[in-house]
Length: 197
Ligand SMILES: [Zn+2]
Image 1 (cartoon, rainbow, N blue to C red):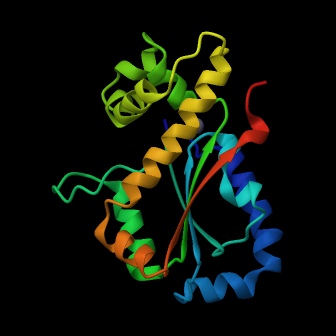
Image 2: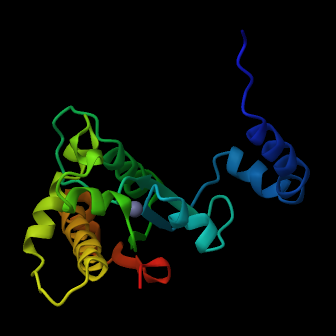
């Protein structure tokens, strides 16, 4: 039996073609001819609430976006393994020449919660636990105050994780050099507006 392509996607694509694509055809044509020159790269979480194009009201070609679980940047490690986020950084910095890199953390991050709370099933799979191992180390450096609620502590870990990723950005030699020459600025951001209260 042939499994149909999801109808939701077919409907959405038809709507896009008739609406946004039709009204922005010229912009899409220029982007298709390789005229891509975004000045901002954003690294955001896969969480559905953290979509940069949506929350910053950006059109195609305005922000170079990379999303991964818990918006992490790994350290510079040219070891032949699969480094998708590092590959995207290399493209954005060396080919596109972005002048800002923004790492955006967010409240109630499921990835951060999974790795900081013992026994969470997400942390014991083949990949997620290993990908998030650095967050466990970051969490260990965040002071534990017994007056803190669980949500407050998670927020501090989420924010410390952004700082950790900023430090990892500076382990990439071509980022460090450009930052030193003031050709590139690194920013940490935190989506407080959808945190737990
Ligand atoms: Zn998240």
